[in-house]
Amino acid sequence: MTLAIDVAGLSKSFGGRRVVEDFAIQLETGRICGFLGPNGAGKTTTLRMLCGLLTPDSGHGTCLGFDIGAQADEIKRRTGYMTQRFSLYEDLTIEENLTFIARVYGLDRRGERVGEALKALGLEARRRQLAGALSGGWKQRLALAGATLHEPKLLLLDEPTAGVDPRARRTFWDEIHALSRKGLTVLVSTHYMDEAERCHEIAYIAAGRLLARGTADEVVEKAHLATFRGEGAGVDRLSPELAGKPGVESVAAFGPTLHVSGPDPAALEAAIAPYRRAPFVWTKVSPSLEDVFIHLMGRVEEGSAPGAGAGR
Image (cartoon, rainbow, N blue to C red; front, top):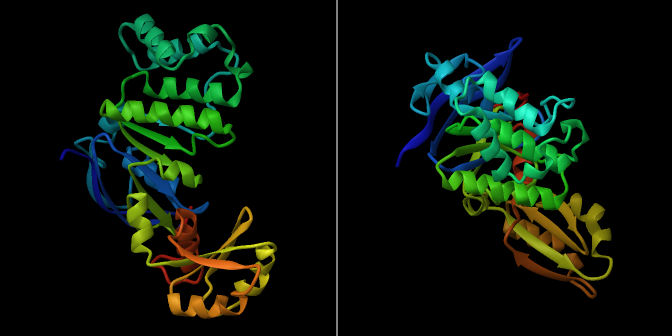
C-alpha cells in the first residue's frame, strides 16, 4: 500500500480560537475520501493544511511523499484545487481560460494539453464559448479541467457540486472516479449524503476533531445507533411528540415515512410503543448515513465530543 497522505497531530488556530485539533489520517493513493461535517467544522482548514496552503501550528506528516511543513511548495505544485465558487475568468472563453492556466503552470505542449482536456470533459464543441455564459454544470466541468490540466497527483474539491443539478452531479462523479482509477487521490468536502456514499471512504469532522472514519457502511456500523422506520397515514405528524421522548435522539421524515433513532434500542422501543397501533407500522432498520451524522452532530452540540465548541 502506497500512502498519498500520512499525517498526525495537525492543529490550527486563528486569533486564539482552535479550529482543527489533533487531526490524523492515512489515505492510500488513488482513493476518494469524502470530508463531511456541519458548517464551521474545520473541513476546509484541514484540506488546506494537507496540501500545503496552510501551515499547521503543530503536527507532522507527509503528503505525496513530501513533508507538509518543510516541502509545502512541492506539494502545491502537484495538487489541483477546485473551490466551491467558480474562480476562472468569465470574460474569457473555455479554451482561453485553459490556455491561461497552462501558461501559469509553465506547461509544455500547451495546445495539445488543452485539446486533450477539452475532449476528456466534453468541452470541445463549446471551446469558444465565454465562461460567464455557461450553466452551473458546464462551469463545473471547466473548473475540473483547469484543476487537473497540470496532471496533479492530488485533487482537492471544496463542495464542488453546490447548486448543480442532479444529472450534472452524477456526470461529475463519474469523471472523478475515472481520474481515481488512473491513480489520482481525491479529497472532497460535501454536504450531500449520496455523494458521501460514492466516496471510497469518508471522514466526519465536527468542532475541529475527526469523529468518524471508514467506508460509509463502517461508519454506520460503528455508530451503534438504533433506528425504527414508521409507516402509515399521518405518521409524519407524530414527529413533535416523539422528539421529546426519552431515548429518542432524532426524528426525521423521509417522504411518507418517519425515521426515529437513538443509541439505546430498549429506550427507543419504549418510546414508540404507544404508537404501535393502526394505521402505523414500525420496522427496525439499518440507520442511514444521515441518521448517523445527525447523531454525531448531537454529540458535539451537547459537548460530549472532544473539542466541542471549536470549528471553522
